Image 1 (cartoon, rainbow, N blue to C red):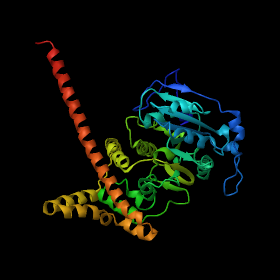
Image 2 (image 1 turned 30 degrees about the horizontal axis):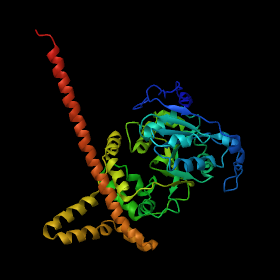
Image 3 (image 1 turned 90 degrees about the vertical axis):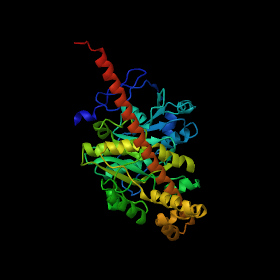
Image 4 (image 1 turned 45 degrees about the vertical axis):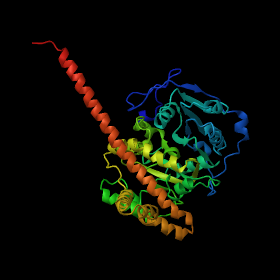
Length: 433
């Protein structure tokens, strides 16, 4: 295990050199720019204050945190993300910021170079998993902190995250903590229906390991569906205490570096679900590891998506989701309610098209009655429309997975045809007799 704590092989000039045995990695030429943190930036930062519980902290004992920001065509957002990270009430000598520009074609890299952070550039877009792996190759900290370009954080975020590790019995030094995640909220000025739906549905909040959420990764589809319904009906506000989670999500996750190197980082062949995949492989490599959420470490996430972009995202991710479920030998999710909605709408359309249209609009709140319950309980009429959003999200997910089946079958058939052609050519070239 001691070898896992050693740094990975260094990179030659102009190249990211992946260490031996890293599965599904991509060796990509990069450009690295580094600026030492300016003295005026450090001196102007407020001194770290004690955690809210009043306990004194020895800041020299805090873990060294490596924040890896994955950016792609983010000239509009990257400055505020970096500025929020530079303003952390955390000892400047105990954390570093590394930005991986994943092949941006806009001014992202130019803007990043104005700040005292390290910049590594991919010549082409390789995907977020490859960008996170590049970060893993270049960091020097104890904890790898994932961060995305569309996020900002409050000044005490990093301190609260470190405090979470310490409350977990110095988890970054021991073997029971596989990772720690932050809480997510939307910007207070964000009023779009998509943002309000993702907040109300806890779209970016991993399910807790206790309660009905523990069966969401069960291979029995009936148990999974019943757990899904139970989670929806028994909706609870996010916990105010550190709690174990099923897995961690994307830009709100952090991991001990030794744990990530144990599983060779992220699977760069996945453009989506790479966060779920790395968590599954961590638990498979060491079943004693657990993931935890720290509600006092808050990330403000502004996806800035329209309804069309939100639905399309679920559809496009279908292929990689299918690869992920196959990789962990789990049956892909099946949402029966969109199928029921389509079946009823189509059947009624043969009898009365106008009635069919009316049913299509009216049915979602009755298929997803928990939104009706929450609309009344929380006195938020807007929750009524969220049933339609959930229907669209689940339908897009199903169609995306179906598209994944088709594409993977075509790839497999194409490989079979190619192999058969190669075999025929080989036999034809063999000498007679």
